[in-house]
Length: 438
Image 1: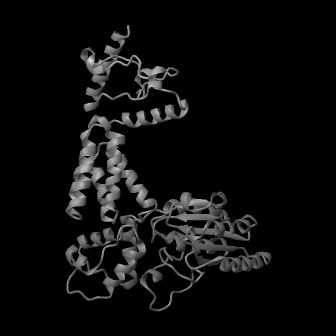
Image 2 (image 1 turned 90 degrees about the vertical axis):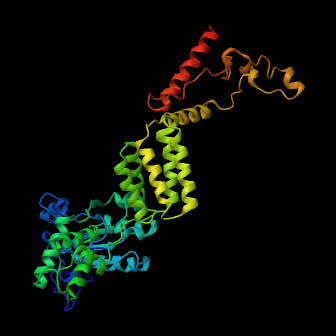
Image 3 (image 1 turned 45 degrees about the vertical axis):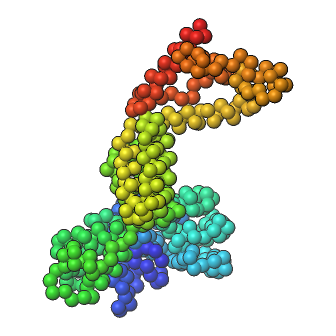
């Protein structure tokens, strides 16, 4: 199980076994004891309203590890008088589901509905997810699925249409402090920590209540002559690694945040998200590829050096490796964040690609076509071509558009950075062209 206070026993009122882990002994016995999720369990929350009405809809609980998804499901069954069954999508298959559905149907015929809790529901494939549909629709089961992944990407649309998606928040410092206080009350002694070390312990949990209680259990199991400081606490315990899946939502959320911070010219926030990704183990070359793309898409010709800086950072990282080469990535990130911004080249690309698709195979005007053979010369290829270097100002003002397509404007530079100078150049050539063709 991947949620706070995991337990295979379906009844929330059951007394934990002697010697059970601290997280189990502190498992809430009522919905009101769940910390950090008042937006759901409070009187005005979705779950609070369902319990008050005595009717529970099928639910997908989406949230980080250690935030109470399993506990919430178990207590909901008690609150509305449903029989509780739990499975893990990691350990179960179609045969297990068929048995559960058959038993649930027998109980339903006897007047007892079943709440089926499915942990890591996103691990079931599309066909397995579809198998829930008829039993949810006819009321045989009330489904509560728990997932750490974005349901929009991981769950079937048909299943999502039959369930409410409720989002659990990572536990904040207040909620985690509440867990510490409960642990101290249960153990009838304070944690051997200074005030700063207590704050460091909470920060090290990164919003995961179960991880925090596991750390607390370790602290209660040892004898220390004096309260631990942040430094001595760090030597004793390990910090929780940030939640980050390189091919899932955490990955895309952080790269999106980095991109938006760069676009918004906030170098401090951009550095923070860059650090979040690299500290969590993201592949540096992936980050560099995104920076190179940003240099063209969002800075463009407002500062042509942006692309040069990013490619230089890539070369520097290839040469130095990690960790020395990561400073070059930081340099490129700061350059992009502080550079003038323009997406004019990006807009121009999309517009010109669209025109190319729509105009098909229009021939360029004959005067700008090469004529390497006699036949091509005879049919007019290259006839009348004006060699710009022979013209005054090195500019002939000739037409370069197909005969069946008038001149188009795809690229409009902004009045920022170097692109303001490009705008002056375009205006200059446009004026000469008008004069030569007047």
